[in-house]
Image (cartoon, rainbow, N blue to C red; front, top):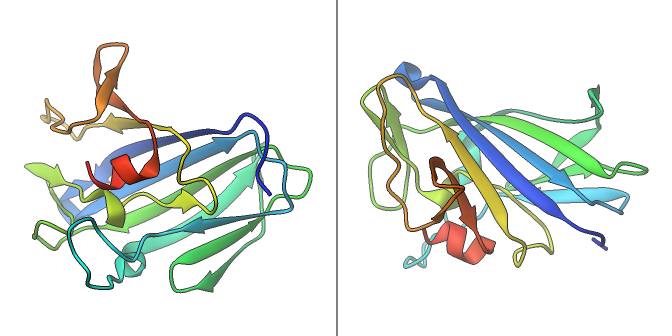
Length: 169
């Protein structure tokens, strides 16, 4: 289904930290398929409870070459994007985060605690793919604390070798 040299990257920004929102941009290239299913996990490492992380996703959109792509939420945690003749997709969504626990996320002007399972969608069938995560911090934020390796000594750009490690970081 998915072939080619798949590249996945995320940019996370906090333009509305005071309202508990992050904006996520996901870029996927190397696609060779007619549809792409993006999934929000319903689990988090170390817990067997089924989660409803997708309830915090707002304003989902997809585009290619600056043009909107058709997308449909086909299940509570899966968005399907029409990718016929499209090799690269840009997905954007807002994420509401105002629940503090070890398995959920919280954003305010002082900091962001991001539980990866409830933040990052993954392309179906591509859990083994690496992903680059770039954080653009809110004003005054100076550090990122994670076990993910830095890219080019940039503390705000991290690499995950696969999604299992990303969701456990």
